[in-house]
Image (cartoon, rainbow, N blue to C red; front, side, top):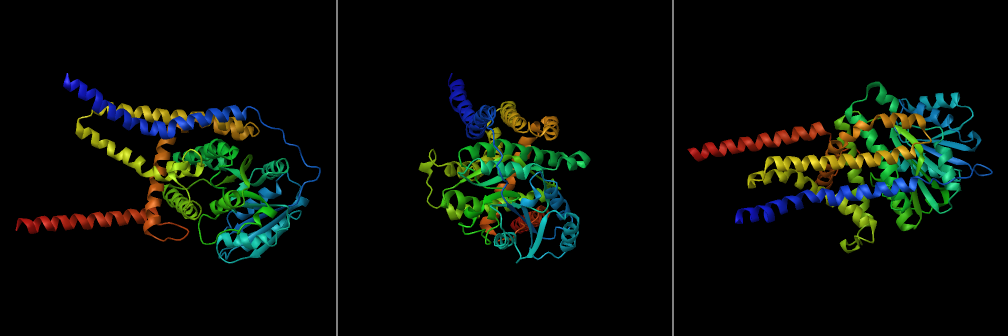
Length: 445
């Protein structure tokens, strides 16, 4: 009797508590948010076109972008927004390749666009800041030179501004280029596409409704000119200048920052795992740099009243116990927990993560109704929901490494590549192993 009582109250109770951690912290809140979003998206609001389209200034920061700049400017040319109301400023921050020649070719080709170029100090933040002083538009739009605009993106973004005077800044929806995926896409790239679609057209849409957007995308964002000029401009001392600008507008100026879901900007898909490794570490470090500046007054007691406390705990603090939960669960096997029971718990949790992805999948399909070609492509990628939990786990591990590296190293824009860190790990392990062997030999003597 005591054996069964011990098994029921101790082992089963402990295991159930262990398994409930990801369910309570991540899965249930994600499903609830998706259901709310599905209900909200069922009633889209009607936006009225302005009597006269305002002048907009598009800033394109360039650094060694000869391979992508022409396509970027061509996407502005193909935009449905009136060309007479567009000013394009190419901010070249010390490029060493053929970027200027590409700009000159574009200037000759797109003669109905008001194209100009300025040369700025090195660094994306400095390039954007310098370009702001020559911008004449009512709205300032920043796009990266390695992506292309969907033809209606500019029009849809300005429509949202013109129909809501309370919106100070907008960020667009970022998706990877589906044509590249159709040609030679691999599993990692499809997961990245699925991740972007769900992050912007599900997660950020809900954050936007409550003015809780953590960061505007540095790839594609827009501002009312009078608002951005009231900030401290872009911080050149952080690699998270887009996050810093978001915090300045929302927290310092008390203005609204939202997402424009139907303003799409297409970027190139990630090349490989090594590029993902450096990219996500850079993002993590940028977030931490900005968080240190703006969240010094936060307290855990504000968990239910301040979204930033919840965001930091769930996305940053819980990175450590999440990894511990995954790795340390193996220890339960040494306490005679059933391998079958442990395996079933992982299967159940994995299926629940797939369920979350499918809910988000439905939310994205709702918001892509206005883009039938994109919607058809996304609808065919439903299978990615079955691999997305593994991809998300890999990204969580990379972010954890980014947290640790940011506390112990001071790297520049690009973090240490995965292969270089892997070589260091092997070197350290080999050195320690040799030390252990030498210690054993000396002990025997």
